[in-house]
Image: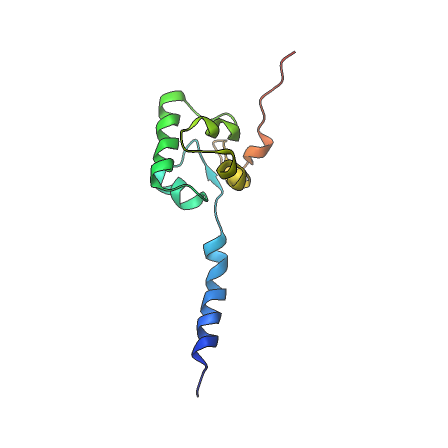
Length: 104
């Protein structure tokens, strides 16, 4: 049986794509730096540790937008991860649904 090596490589790449492209969800109020770096796009070990350090110093994040207070986290990184950011203890509610209450 003579198989084309290119087809085997293509099949391997295609089979790995779902696992490579899948990120999150992750609770930014409970996850450690290694988990944050693994699950959030554009977040490496240094930014992930900055997220944890900020949380330890200032308390839990109340909204996803609070991540913009962390040095090195910009709007683009926040937007590309917003659907995978969780804030609750159970880790089941999307951060986009968490908005601060408006005061009159």
